[in-house]
Length: 403
Image (tube, rainbow, N blue to C red; front, top):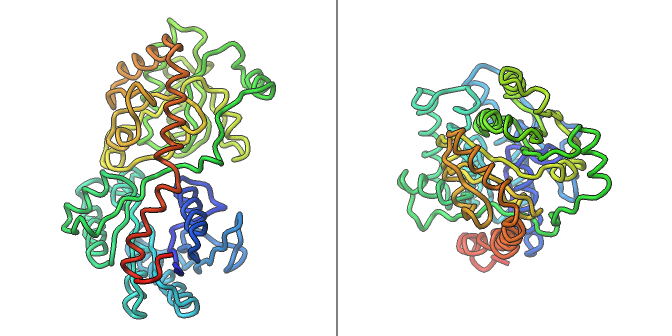
């Protein structure tokens, strides 16, 4: 089985998207499938048209000149389509596997039709919903409706649709796609790549360096997007700080909300108790996780978070970390409340503060919760289990060549 994947971007860039991609590709190769990989112009300018990264080879697309909205997207599609057809004619894949956004699905559909190659499309989030969070459009706007229509056009024309969770599957089926044509490939973790956390003398040294010695630390590690709800975490912390003078918040990373969060901490009189590390090298991330006693995933409720399951809670479970998370749909698909984590009412700072306080006041529960989370990712949410779900669909589209 030879599969040509079409991707928005890939490693060495770091994102949940690139980490999921790398895990899928490695597991597909472990099954004996031959995979090839093309990134769209959104990878950015690269040193070469072909790059080897962490044992995976990526073909790159030429980056076209930017233009106004509409023209820019058309140029991205054309550049991806041109490179994809060159590769498909050369590699002769059994299957083209496009990954969201729809800017990759359209070139895949066109090339697949011209060359007689089956096309599948994997949706990790809807492009229009991501645009709402990024502030480039609003729900129900002309651009939103046009993008949604384009997405619907694409999923009705591919041979099969993959997606990452039940929320997205239901939305796709509601657009008129037969349930038999939609398969969930759940987010998962590489168990071997995540060992249970074991703080050591280096952790203690880093705690002192960051002014956290003797403190109880709430924290978040990742990108500071508005939907992550870190503003709610600071509001909840403000409610807890006076009665818990040893409490601190550690925010590791950066992003569009960085300046707003710093201003909020200042406004709440908490600037000396909220530590912003900025972005840290990927190799150092696990050390910062070990500084945090209790993680917070306070995502706000919106279409994106209600439909899409994140990777962070799974990675936390794999490392034996504990967390409190909002009860948005994407979290409820992953988290067993009171067993593998705690859920609170999304958007409610008082509910978040109460959940955090309850966890901190009942540390005797922590060992059982850590063990339950680790078992969940070991037995259920691992990449071997998830990637096995491709086999049936691939085999039906390319008879006699599923292995």
